[in-house]
Length: 172
Image 1 (tube, rainbow, N blue to C red):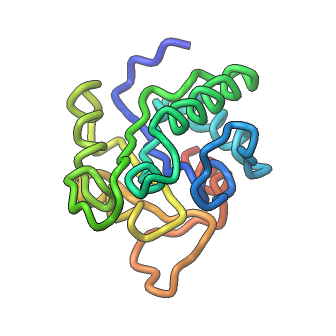
Image 2 (cartoon, rainbow, N blue to C red):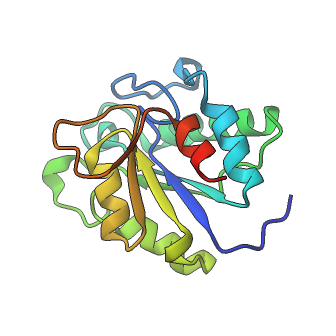
């Protein structure tokens, strides 16, 4: 499928697309939520390009190398193909620990802004989704829409959907 519309959905990885395994570093430990691929199919059917934006502080903390993160992402792209979906259009990875004060760590907008510029995306037609408030805030900080899925926080400062599939169905 060739997608010429300049709109995208940026997705957090752990807790949004896959279950959060606390410093996941092995492809064989990937566990998808039951609705992940159905939701992604709807998003792509509506013409959205899909990207992943993820903080991977396990690299900065020395728990595993960046190559392990790339191996997990290669497996996730292969899983997309298995489910007859286009692979992700880009992977934004912050490999730093929280105390490194980098400019790429969510909720900072840098990773999203780089993709918006690189791929000529229209910010008014883009979303950032994640299971935490910092994910939605990352989107807002980048000038796009942000929403929390799966885990409603006590703050409740952002649009909330009970599941990724609920969000996808709202696109209709």
